[in-house]
Image (tube, rainbow, N blue to C red; front, top):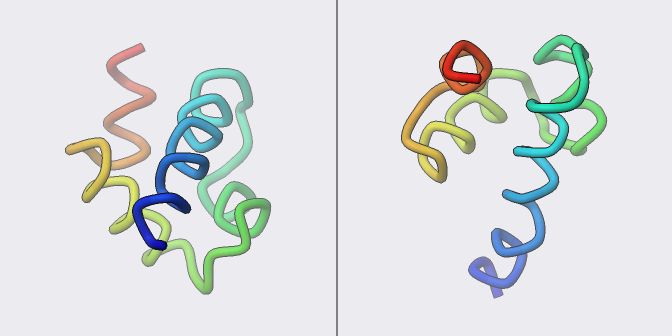
Length: 58
């Protein structure tokens, strides 16, 4: 079940990181994570880089 959720969640996160200038707090709230730190850990686990690091690579 978790894998299925990740298949849909990760592309949405990538799109939001690429196409918005929302803060990490706003993104974590938009994606309904419990906290910005949990959002950051989730992104690092699935993308291999923090949300800020991902944005810097763009």
